Image (cartoon, rainbow over all chains, first blue to last red; front, top):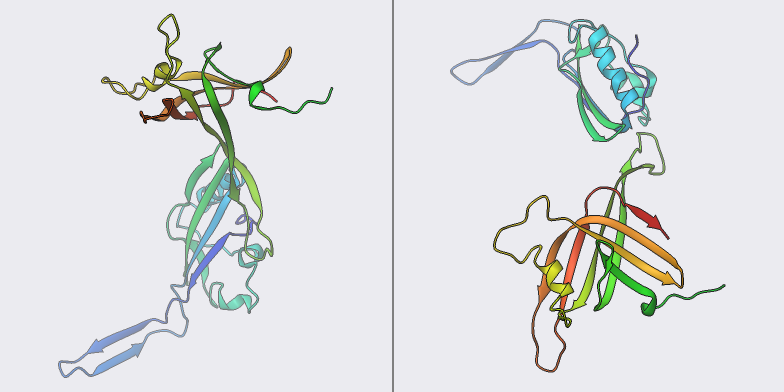
Length: 124
Length: 141
């Protein structure tokens, strides 16, 4: 089962970083060592407000299918709707894939309507 | 037949019994809307949420020959020494009458506020506000 192809109500992206180790000497001088050539650890928060319970269930089913935070996956184009820049800029960087950073948070708004909050993290 | 309703056609009933000295009543019906706008949309969209009904009424603080004071019956729901229990609901019917035809809205609710006082040269009246709990029992308008 693929990630649900719903358009989010809000999206929050953070770019992550390259694997850099920083050492600071007693004099205050800083040394940095780059341990890899790929950026990772990007995070993506997706909010789906007031969707039907059936659609909210899709996220719970997908979370279960990926065995929680164990399996990685890619996101459909719908997750990036509204972004007019290059999709690669806010998707998992090269070599990365998304996994859940926590379980989906489902809030029941009224009978048959729920809001879902998803937190993802990009990993190599 | 055409009909223009006026205050003469208005009634307020408590548990099916018409309250005698009512000078005003009003009902407010609301439905909240839940936003379903998504990224990429150019116009906001909504889906209906929860309904709510509330209102207010003004009754003369009047005691009839039998000693019954309609206003006091409602006032005692919040002006008392024992607090308000979940059982302290009232069934109110807001009616517009056209001969044998009644346009009724009936609700069960709580009296949420009451105010009354006395002023020189004025008839004493009581203002109450009410908040319905649950759906309307009747909405024949």
